[in-house]
Image (cartoon, rainbow, N blue to C red; front, side, top):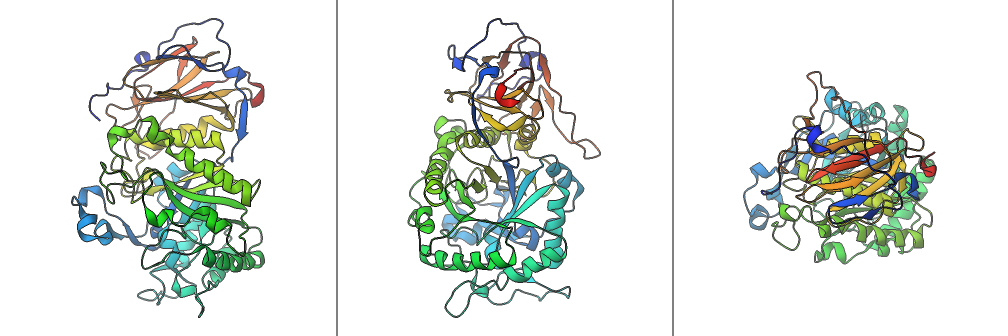
Length: 522
């Protein structure tokens, strides 16, 4: 995205520090480049889960299997020419004991980790310490060993994560009438208990409306879902009564025209007979298809030139409103979890690891937290082009740093900072760990600086980058990177002694006001 002004490289030039008097009232605009907010008066909207910011670790990281081919190795038009197999490649299991990976993940805790994804639908759990067979039995596609699952449990414990998982649903666990049985789920749960593990929540399986051969060749109709879900719920009530039951977990896109995802809706699954009972309503949402599956210029794709547009950033809202209506009808009062999301389906955007995608990431979290979501699971914690952390180097990708600041600064109480303004999105939460304090998240999406007036002295954490499609992230002008010992760098703010801050062009700004005195934050 050439043409954007270079990010400011020194904190003294990134922020203007002047004094204002009498800043009062609700958030409002004072011109296209000036906004004002009185943090002490912001009303409370709602409270979110402490583990709102959560992540998926795909089952292929535990078992090995298929993953999305990197863009560097992907010939143009591969999917159109050679089909689905042309955009996939083999993956080895991931070392979840890696110290760098654990350090980076622990810094985001507490969180939920979802062990799921398409691979989870056809897992064969090898419930033995003997060597596993050379290949999975008929009806399964991958092998999960005891050691691999224990590694997943140990990882969750080490990083203060509660586990959400789905269970095998392929032909290998179905009886003569093709009904689901707990053939894999039963020994899986028993082994989990035997090693001191705990599953907090469970889904029947991954995306019943999104068929992918050979795991669910024809998808899963609402009638089949309801029948199997009743069996699943009865089994879990006896085998693991404390586990939350999550569903229906359907896949949705932010663009229309993909018939396989639109012909069967979440409502059809929730209203089928016998009526499923959900403790938590879940869904998957991707705002577009990645270039592996659709050209960026197609109606289903998205180009980097649209990454900061209002239309693109608003796409998650429409689906969340539909899920809220579904929840209110079929599971009143239940939490709503977005259990899989990212920049685009089909393995992520080409530019997802760069600073450019940070705006979508924090804007999606902020707007959905305000609008009614209780937890958001990003796909993926560690992966290739769609990973929060790079799976080859275990280095943080650009969005990681905004996620770290979110965890440290944004509390569970969401405040109303007013509606989004074109080019300037303002969100606010009670400041984490500071009674009465407020954190404002200000996203300057434009190419020119903007001024934000606040009601009390503040600390500013301004994230910028020398190039939007770069992995380099600057905090108040200084590049963020792990130390030589793989420790996180010092995360220090710039002190705003006055009450006016200049937001650099295309910047993500966390502004904490510890003396705001907001009564909703005490």
